[in-house]
Image 1: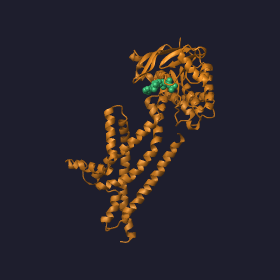
Image 2: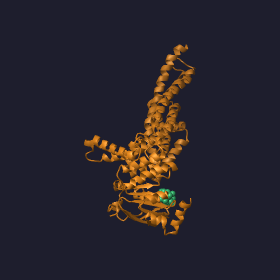
Image 3: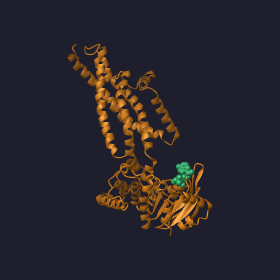
Image 4: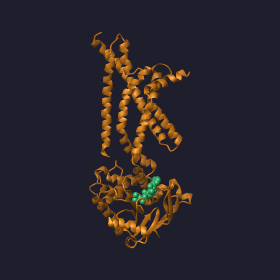
Length: 226
Length: 261
Ligand SMILES: Nc1ncnc2c1ncn2[C@@H]1O[C@H](COP(=O)(O)OP(=O)(O)OP(=O)(O)O)[C@@H](O)[C@H]1O
Ligand SMILES: [Mg+2]
């Protein structure tokens, strides 16, 4: 088959794969951004057993490869006799989402912790002395300072996440790498072709380019104070 | 009647007894300076008065009202403390301005949040906001900052920041305004402008407690001076008494460091 004939077929298949990549990306963010906050509050808790538990979880998740976590989360329930994920692509997506959300919320929690602890104690004290309530102090004084601190490290993690979604290939999630690889093995009459796999890089590059610009703008917006 | 009475205040951190049986009183319109070497408990005392620390023992009365009595659990409730704090203002050594707000917004913020608790807030929203803004502008003007109101803290010098912080504390009209070494974080050439503003407040009979290492200033501005040493009030009196005729050997030693230095 000529390249010009291959291209539309490949393009179509890669688009479908990339849609799955994007879905995993957004679901992970949506889950990990709030869950990370819960974990960070847990690890800063004055109730020692809770804070130790959270710190151990974070240590395990950050200390092992995401790929292994994916495999364990996807296959372990089945091996133990309860396939909780259900079959097919939706089952794989569910398992991948859980693994990614867990993994990323642990990374986010550490970033949040840095952001929260980085706001000087004097800010809260100034608020208290001015008769503000703790919630007023959080929302009106410390929150924006925390956001400003966490935007740059979060941007890094978010861009890493875009690329990390490709790890879901290990449980055969039909994301863009899977789609690209399918033309190696044979798909719609195209086989033994490697360029579609290489071409997936363009998708990542463009998407990360857009994210970099958007996150950069957010960072700029917060530059009006120090 | 004294505007402030502190009786037998004590405070312990872990194993160190930082405040030991501190008692003093202050009349309305007077200025009390607290001097003493590093670690003698001056900051802790101000923080206790502002309820940033909870005294282990003692009584705090303002205008005859018992704000805190360690023996009366009714007065030590967390929920009541916020209202009680409003009797005091505190200006920090490190300013602690809110960086994301302009000078004017810094002065207005707390007042506006408090105004929301008024029953007629919804009906008079605009009017209340305008009043608060007008007052805040007046205060900043009084601090010599009329052309700096829309600047953010990072665009201001240390001396200007501290003057904004003073305006911010004054906006809530506290009965007693406390200063914790207000000029210690400033370059010497910026110290004067802040001290001048505080002197101005003293001339208007603002009741103040000032922790300071500026001995000449303390002597000039105070009606009363306390010398603290190791968590105790070692000597107390008029500036003349404490600076010119100190009774205690420790006080003499401490003051000599300033005159000879
Ligand atoms: N939160 C705390 N926990 C434990 N110890 C504390 C705490 N705050 C203060 N201290 C101790 O209490 C003592 C008195 O401290 P404080 O800050 O009140 O002194 P100070 O007179 O203000 O000193 P300086 O002139 O250096 O500001 C010091 O020994 C200090 O180490
Ligand atoms: Mg101090």
